[in-house]
Amino acid sequence: MTGRTAVDGEPVGAEARLMLDARYGHFTAMQVRDRRVKGLGRHLARLEAANRELFGTGLDDAAVLASIKTVLDGGVRDAGVRVYVVEHGGRPRIVAAAYPPHAPLAGPLHVKPVVYQRYLPHIKQASGFQQAHILRVAGAEGFDEALLTTADGLISEGAITNLGGFAGGRLVWPDAPMLRGVTMSLLQDLDVPQERRPVRVSDLPDFDLVFLCNSWGIMPVGRVGGVPLRHDAGLLARLVEHYEGVPGEPVD
Image 1: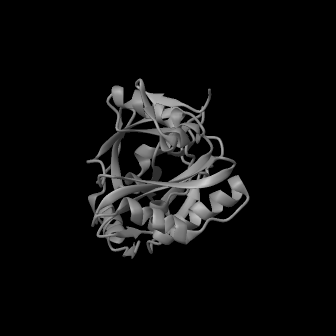
Image 2: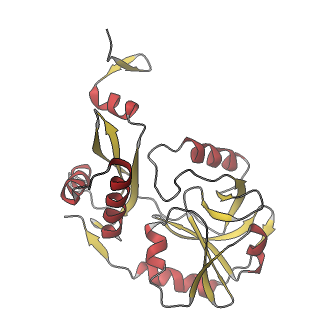
């Protein structure tokens, strides 16, 4: 007899078995407010691009939106939502899940540099043991997030965030392999001089502001390792004002 699955000794059905078997795929994470999502079209575009790369086929936006609306059923207006596209039964399947809404972490944050580079970093991968372990260890040591770096300190991204900063009047992004987050892309619409260049951990104390961003929002960094960083409140306010001013796109 095969095909049976149990969790803590209790039998479970095909839906739980699907998630156990679904190790290959990609996802996106978003925050829904009043049934709207900032950058929703960009989330859909990223799912489409990843699906073509991993599965060789496009993705039906209507099916993705239907899945989102299903997990928001019952009049839910605010939530965190993840949409996974995972392989099961020889084909990609759309799996959506809703969670309580998540606000940005209260900053300034304390971040830990960790030597680690993701495989296919431009894909938001459905299986994330390595990053989960990195965050678990960093959290146990009193850090809020980890920065993924090369052995010589070149920063690519955070474990679950993108990193940016202001230096010399310019908004700077690391020039390294990374996941180009939706929130990062929305901040790149800000009308200020911007550039991509190699950024090392040792460069951060020279920045006027260092921040992390993801679907939760924008979070200033106060220390990297044990080194304090500058915190220009005016620059942070400008970033937050721009981001908060981005209109949400309706899921309905």
